[in-house]
Length: 387
Ligand code: BEZ
Image (cartoon, helix red, strand yellow):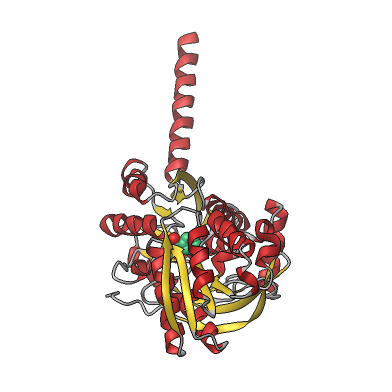
């Protein structure tokens, strides 16, 4: 009798284990490769928050599939990027990767995604190459190319009558491409970039370069920094008294998610970005209310990009009924979608980069207040993309 009971118990346990395994196997494995430490840590957290908010709104499922996360802190370190992404692809067998922030790390991820065919959605990293020469059917971006906000700022600065600018940035792909985009827009409008200053990423020793700027007396300075580095740069610029004489322009990363820490030093600054405070649309208001309620924080552009990465994944998965191996159908659904973003609806280009409005914003208090639309429906030129 007791032997029969033991057999029955073992059978029941085996059934439960098989059922649990089947349920797990039905989950979509999402690799979140983001910075959770270093100068971009806050950006990584905001992206994950945004992604999870959308997932919660969808009852924890996308395309009918529950989601299981595997998380990696990429430390914004390109030297570790290939190992990190290959662990997700080969060891953890993820179905899709969401990441990352740093352009150099993003390019290593795009290379691995292209080689393995794993779906990659980039929720920030602006490296132009990702939707340029590296473009692929399985690689998408929910954010921007480095060229987009930078080109818009160049046009704005030229329209404001600035003739002679100095640029300053971290020396890596995002900074170099941001400066190149600004230069293109600025020179088109008749301006000249007199000098291009750089510091190694993620250094924040700006004093010698600020002294050089003060001596050169340009009409304008264009800077690319983000996260903790942007806080330090904007404060140092003001502490050197430069904000009183030489306007500081930049892509909106210079002041997004940073204003509480920058305080007085950022007031009045003009930046360009695909998101702004005060859009005052029902879509943005409901997003901001939900985000603030869930995280007790105001969202920034990074949160929006994470939220939209989940929206894009949901659109693709719905079209293939959760079967992400159907890559052409998955891509086609995203390509023809109009993504209902808090930033304003956008579409995805052939190269899989958002075609979107770029806003001019002015810092007022703790907000990057909408001034106007600097460039409507701006598409990245996707130079070198052969899709
Ligand atoms: C980048 O490396 O692409 C990047 C990082 C932070 C903000 C914007 C762009």
